[in-house]
Image (cartoon, rainbow, N blue to C red; front, side):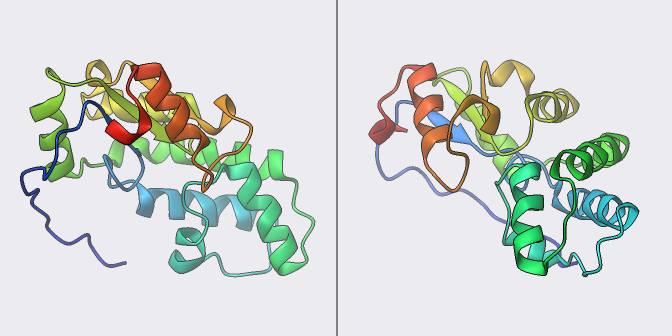
Length: 175
């Protein structure tokens, strides 16, 4: 797997009143761990296809259950979305202590957290997001966490981001 390129953040070209972040792959370099958990869970249920990095990224941001449903349609399988998702979550929870911060993003969070309201909008479940934020020592920076369970339409629909903006009290255009 390729490592993430180093990034720096340029000064903002406009004034924002709040910030909404994704968690996996934005705050936390957790995607390689998610891939491992997916591969183990799918193999345990006898999925007859290769769950590659590219395949995972094509589903990034979607709930685990939605992802399994889409995989069933794509590959003609009949995997139980709830069972596979539960095993993926349990496997990922065991791998979670290995997760690393994406330092430039975390530094940006720390630089704005005292001045602006922040939220996380993630396709992961709340328990996983909160555990990740705790591990990265960012929980206090994010009083608002919105997940797919909080909205009717998860990613890629904007519902999570709109709800996060509402909960931090900032118009979406100003986030």
